[in-house]
Image (cartoon, rainbow, N blue to C red; front, side, top):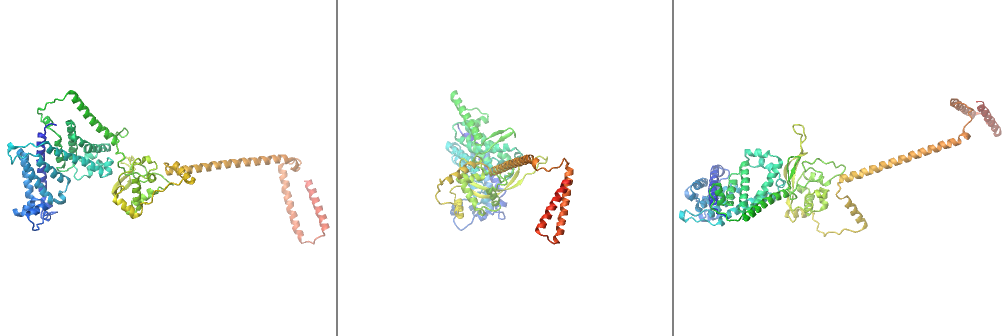
Length: 613
């Protein structure tokens, strides 16, 4: 490792500038924030209870306790301390000898005094970081004011190494906390699509950054994760070029944040900490000064170092591509990416979830879980006790419950391993609208986040266990053995064959099979009826032809019209006879023998008349 004299000096000067900005920024806001008529008067935090000054300093270390001794109130004492801090830090930026341990101790004590009474307006992350970094400055800075310029004691490397350790903790924690928050936007690589317009104080450039395409926003999130989680591991690399590469990546990230958002001195403070990654050799390269360090490494050693560095950067790029599944999308002319299985808003098959998925048609199937999800969203989770059971079973990775969400289990993001954590969010959905040019949008739905529906839980979580016990959902009985009866085996055999088939497909397949069989049966019955009718007619015609000479009346070669005329006359004669019979009903009856002879005579006369015709 090379000398670090120049980076140490640059770090101390940068800290003096940051202290100056912090004190001046706070000074102009003291009357409105902490004045006697401000939002949170500082005097409420300093209660003079008659204790000694030492006891008060121990209970709340602040130089403001000396206000009464100086004859000023708390408000005025705060302004006085800010003016002293601004003046001292300004002097330190101009005079190198004032970048001393004693001076930095005074700056740290002054800011700590403000912090003690600052309440919520001074409880930001950067205020804590400034105090922690400021304390390290006391260790890093030389002690010259008390010992004279000739007694400058160059600190050992350990003190400046502590600054690098603080930088590692800051950056690594910044990346990990994004994942530990379980925020779907960070895990889904879409955080920057919201960040630029939802941050506290965006800059003008944030508007332009927000207009960048989605694939670029996702790629930027990937880069953020790499710079904040992976690159900090290079801070402790024995290869200086790897450390310098890590320095430039950190600077790139901080500069981009500065350009797109107003985060006061936070990013400047991070840049100051990044100076701990440099050495005199690289600073001299900036200043175009000759390097006094001779390179005695052999050519072979240099080439091995280059190959090692190339392998590290290549592995970092390859790991990013694999972990985030980065792919070139030629159709959209961009890059698609995802975070894998680590966090997914688990998508149901039928209810709205995937904004790009069209609404499903499932009639006549009723996905009962999807329906209950809709009803559950109308209230809170306490009104849907079954939802606790759903969370519990998904954490256990129960396949039967998973198939209620995705029939094809391979589409379920946690099919290989159950999720470690689960939570539920409630969104409000609307259909998208056609574009101004009349074309249709790429997505079917648009949604807005409403609130958290179920808190983050895991197996063994106190809240989850309490809810399971409260609703009586935890089965305390031992696992039951599956029966091996023929009926049970048959039922399991059927289940194994329909498993994985979507319910609408199964239902409509059975309906289609039923309709097909009914149609075939109908066609078969119709053919049989047609054949039976044709056979009957054929037999009737055959019988008619066979019986035609015996049973056919002797028409004497008469035409059909003549035959019909004869039949009509016969019917008329039959009607006259019937009238005669009716008229004779009232006459005196004759003996049986006479009646018989009379009837025989009448039949003979009718036969003679027919033969005449």
